[in-house]
Image 1 (cartoon, rainbow, N blue to C red):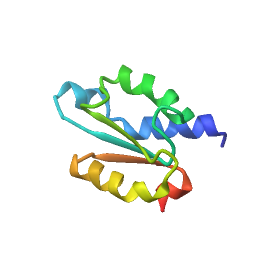
Image 2: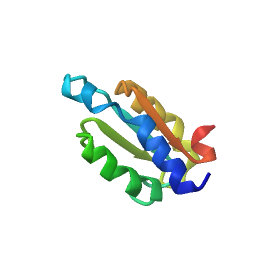
Image 3: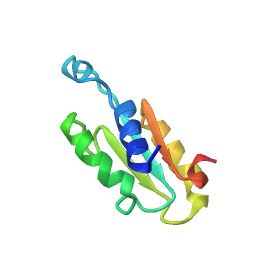
Image 4: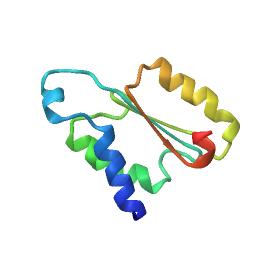
Length: 97
């Protein structure tokens, strides 16, 4: 499976159906990457999908990046869990650990 196809698959899996959105359910998505959140290709591919489904950064989408420091990741993950995200997208082996 090519990387772009995989990212598209993750985007589809991470977003709820439009019917759930229409019912007013607040589903939150957390995204964490070892790098900054504006650099990875995955963010640029996922942003239009999230916007099309009605998700808004800072309200229902929470992007966090370790800025190249894997030591920051545990605190960032905890912060996302404290926001009660329903889905956590983890990118990169260091973030996954």
